[in-house]
Image (cartoon, rainbow, N blue to C red; front, side):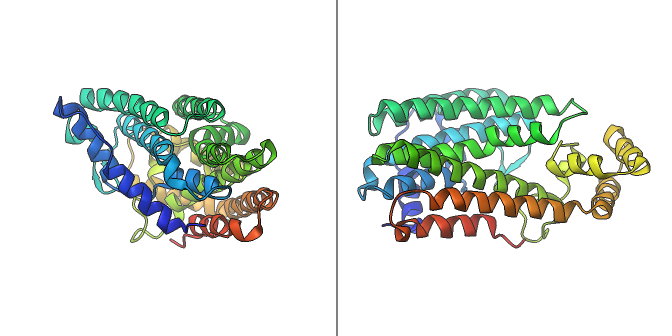
Length: 322
């Protein structure tokens, strides 16, 4: 069994070795740029870990894993453009470093490259179908996220479904595809998918929590961004559910206001979160999802020792204290 660090090293080398056409340079340079500026490489790592539960020759499916990483970064490139974000991983976003038209076309090319890379990997019709389902589902989640920006009555269930599609589904499919290519039976495939999906949901809720309560010295984004942007997060939805009429009116004022000081808005909404106990509720939800994820992992029918790295990875992913 490989360690997570050993597998990440394989992925990192694989990303550096992706072959690009020399011309036109302004099409391929942005792709090389976004793939080179870091990231946790979670999705290809999980695919290799899922495979490694059943087989040791993980290099065999490296192109399949790189396809998932290329696809994920494609979504980030276009997300940044849609959100008009200036920075990604401490660097200028592609549409800021180049321009919006370049970001669109380079992103489209990345999507094609992702399918090309997967096709260069191990051939398996079931894995190919799963890859298609995963990539389509993420786009569906992104559309829900866009729809929610102009919707004032997003329910808790709708929000959880949106983040399932946009974020956690790809983690689940990474493990499932690895298991398929490794020869796992349908039951193990389903349990590994469920482990990744539940872990991904917990990860996204933690990200929401960190946006408000994280340590600004360690968190890589400006705190309170979701509040400023009126993002319909689990935290905001629960705040509306638990707030009294006066607190709801206060939330409405800040959510509908067009001319405001960001620091005042963040402080006011966070104050309401504190009063109604949002931080504790989110932490409880995260712990429940994390527990469910581990239960799914325990059902996977391989030796418990082989699942140690996945347990450690989940602990590390969800144990950030900042």
